[in-house]
Image (cartoon, rainbow, N blue to C red; front, top):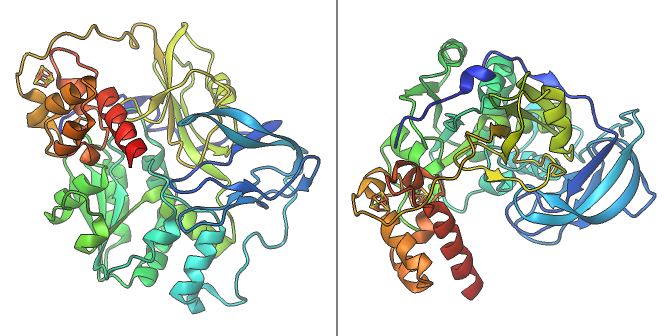
Amino acid sequence: MVRLKEHKELTESKAIERFPAPARVYIPLSQHLGKSCQPLVKLQDQVFLGQKIASAEAHVFSPIHASVSGKVVGLQDWPHPLLGRSPAIVIENDGTDNRPSSFVPRPSKSVEELSPEEMRSIIFEAGIVGMGGASFPTQIKLNPPKPVDTLIVNGAECEPYLTCDCRLMLEKSAEILKGIGLVVKCLGVKNVYIAIEDNKPEAIRLFESAVHGTPYAVRVLKTQYPQGGEKQLIKKVLGREVPSGKLPFDIGVVVHNVGTLLAIYEAVYLNKPLYERAVTVTGSILSNPKNLLVRIGTPISALIDYCGPLKEAAGKVIVGGPMMGLAQYSLDVPVIKSTSGIVVLSRKEAVKPIEEFCIRCGACVRDCPAGLMPCMISLASSAGNWALAQEYNVADCIECGICAYVCPAKRDMVQQMKHAKFMLAKTK
Ligand code: SF4
Ligand code: SF4
């Protein structure tokens, strides 16, 4: 792992501000790992804020809800921040935020009386997915196929520039703690560790005092990238290693991001589906970088305008953090459930270095947090030798970008990793 320049000072002291709901939202039908959803609405339908508008028939999926009230004016392909393009539901906002009396079907009981099964059902119906980036449907992680003994709350937020999780910890600590309580009840775990990097001293103080006298514990971690990856976090907090090809529950652990825990709280206590999220909109060339609470489906161009004006022409716009995020070809792409940040880089910051030959220095091998040999995988991938890339365990790559960051030859290894994984998935 490495220490990166953080750039968090641009927004870390900015309280989360509500971004006004836009005139139109573009809600993609693919927002999670697993099967894409199908629309439950048709053109010209009137929808409520929070109404379920898309679902699927599959084991791994999460329903999707309207983020404004209004009329469905489009069922069409639209730019997508991760997939290039994807079918989307377009809703014209009527500006009323008209909502049903109950968003999510639930038994008429108090929260304390709900069984784990009932809570999982509410969380599923609310469309909650992992909000730290992976977008795995949360109800599945709350029903692991093996017993688990430990919950780790991921408050690391190790990507440079991003601060929305830190702000949530400062502004919504009571709600996050209630979310933790719900997850503890669902999983039946004994141990809860709240992992926070030492570059967030205020959040550490707040949570240390909040958990005093509870069975929960705060674990302060030295700031390092990519500590927020599930496997890396488990190693740091518990010293346990998730074996290659296995998942955290295989070693008795579940990890949830702080944003996900807040969404769980909102679903169960407030009966609110996931139709908005906190997003850091940042970059040194933005005049007013901010943390915003944004409706799902809001085009990122509107957020950049809101945080502007730009001090100079942008060279690159990334959705996510600068290390693991994706550069965008269109600013029409909307915020989706996993969008934690929008980073606007200047032309100078965005210059792509010229790749040279590998000099076999070993820096990428030394620093790869997954214990891989990135230089060998990238050579295998560039030669189209997917079987060799597989032998070097490319599937364990978390696409953190450290290998490219430390490489003196500036080799674009992450692209090679992604390409090899894509080709191997295709041949399965
Ligand atoms: S090989 Fe993958 S996991 Fe290892 S440093 Fe490169 S991007 Fe990160
Ligand atoms: S860091 Fe770059 S130059 Fe060094 S071994 Fe890895 S790929 Fe080769």
